[in-house]
Image (cartoon, rainbow, N blue to C red; front, side):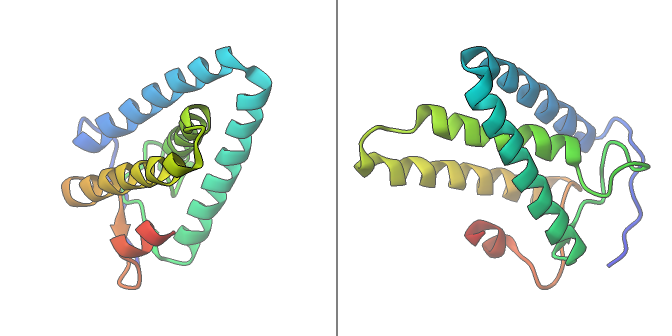
Length: 142
């Protein structure tokens, strides 16, 4: 599966990347102000896991990213992955309900929001492209 990279310009993809980076950075600052050790370590671990999984899925040709901010340095949106998925993890840990009965709907809602955003990106942008052996259901179940 070979796709030419799109040059960075003023496309919707550019604005989505910049928005994710800005919101992610501001979210990281918020959580680091609350508890730098706890949330800093969790951010690093979530970043490593998110980028490693993304790297594996790209190398297995499950999906690719035709548009990245820095095509000379990236074949996947490292900056966006680093500042989006870990912030969701920090949010989920910080605001998880205390009662077990509410934890499943809480986390399920977060997963559905993530899948909704991925669906929007898939149908309205050139940010992600699935291979024939990967689809939205696979992303949802992972």
